[in-house]
Figure: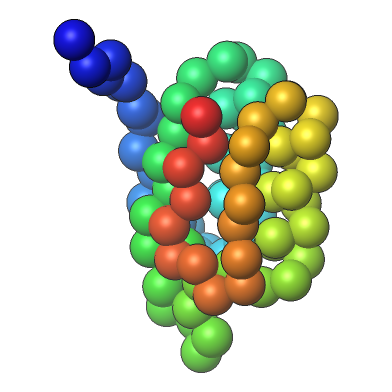
Length: 81
């Protein structure tokens, strides 16, 4: 049987719609041991998606949490698992 994962979903365009929500969601996912999907990252910005500083933060979070995340600049969705 194939394993299924319950994932919390965060809309990255909510509130101010910047990268802080993505950074916080990644950190909380690792800290709480929960799977999180962040969609619509920076959707309302002139350059939507992850910027270099968000990628660096996500990679650091992945390293600390022992995850195999490989975010890239421009990604508009991110799965933390």
